[in-house]
Image 1 (cartoon, helix red, strand yellow):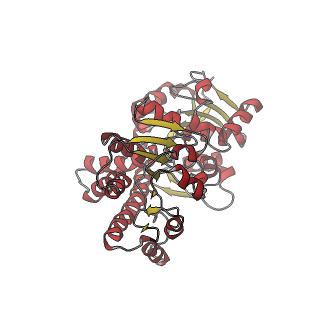
Image 2 (cartoon, rainbow, N blue to C red; image 1 turned 90 degrees about the vertical axis):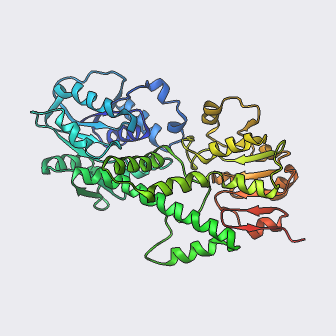
Image 3 (tube, rainbow, N blue to C red; image 1 turned 90 degrees about the horizontal axis):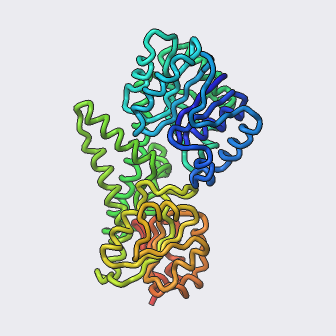
Length: 430
């Protein structure tokens, strides 16, 4: 099939790489960036397989990648829109610009997270043409984009036309051989389902964080609570890990988008408001634990932070807890020594050269030199098994604040540290 993909985000890059990999004739047209810029992007470089597949497809001639390339004739079978939610107006413009190039029976794939009803709206732009729009919401996971596209557990297919469904199935046939992955439903239902899924996941996380806070107050180790809840088959373990808040460009955006859909429909969701509020409050948890440990005397202290990215495997810091932490610490005159293996350029781009910030990208232990406490914010694998004795020599204070509960509290305490996790704590024996 002749496929034209518009977008400059990870979803566009992955679709271009995967569809050209299986033999489709793909033209990827980034909306606002050139290939010379995209290929050096941290988010693309660190995404396993995607950059390699893009390069291979271009060399094989299955993929052309130009910002404003012209596609000859009415032979586009699939117009794939992988845009950000802020590019809603661009979507209509792109459909109009490609109208004369769309083949009879072509499909528009809305892979973006736009307001409910926008897939139908995109089709209405081409009134009179035999072109159908379908919703195929982006469900990629950053750090696992190639795997989640080519070996998807499920795709939500919003489709009201049997011919359009056959076109999508042919387009994605190579990725639908292990088991049936398409869940067909009306277009509006698919758009709402995408938002509802992330709303549910965010609610689970926030509920678990509330239980962690209660466990802290009651002197209960929340790990027992988590294991007991997860063992109940009605609940399960997925997204049941307390932490210092979630972030990311898609997860946070979709939750806000769901709130907006509620408001636009004339409904108000107190539940979603609470989920958002709990998450923002949780981003300050490690700061409050630091405050309590030092009884509010923080000015002039130094804190080491391990991890800035919103999750391991990415260089993105969109809505990441570290941004909230930095603001809170700097407001108290605390110097921060920050280590992250990938996200430091993004941090520098957001906060600049702050006088209370030093960045470290090599040895995580270097960031701990002379610090009064260590905060673990992102659970990169490089942080899971530190040399505890070397860490103790580097730190001036013996306080470990674990924002992801990746350490064993009793083991850390046995190394001579005061351990404070999310709903977990332990102190060295005297």
